[in-house]
Length: 146
Image 1 (cartoon, one colour):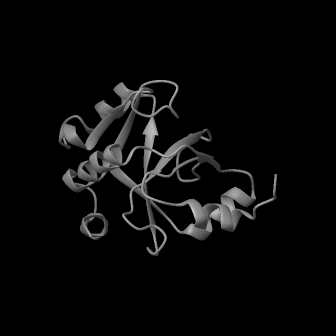
Image 2 (tube, helix red, strand yellow):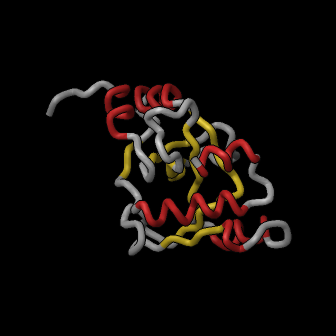
Image 3 (cartoon, helix red, strand yellow):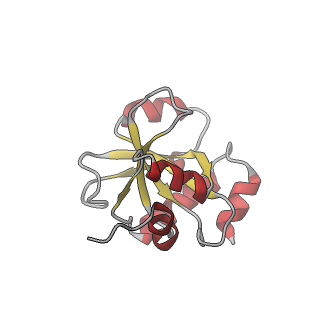
C-alpha cells in the first residue's frame, strides 16, 4: 500500500459525515471519542465543526435535562452507524472547532483514526440538533445553515 501523507488523507477525504476517533485535550477523559464533521463544505471552510458521541447516554441526558430541548441529543444505534459497537448519544449542544491542520497534526502523531463515514441523513439530524440548541453560538449555527 502506498504511504499517503496525513495531510492528503484528511484533505482528500473530509466531507460532511466524516468520522474521526481521537482523544480531545479539552476533555477530562483521556480516552478517544468519535467526532462527526457537520460542515456542509469542510474542504472550503476555515473551521471544522465536530460533534462528539458518547456511550454514556444517561449521563449526557442528565447534563442537559432542564436546559436543552430533547432534539439536541441524538441517539444513534450500531444499525444506524455501523462504526459504533454500542448505542451512543451525540450531544449537539457542544460543537468542537478544529482546523484541518489540527486534524492533520493528530493523524501525523498517530492520535487520530479515520472511521467510516456517517450517513448524510443522520448528519442532517445532527445539524438540526445543533441549530435547535439554545447554548450553541449563532455564528456556528450560521455556518450550518449555509
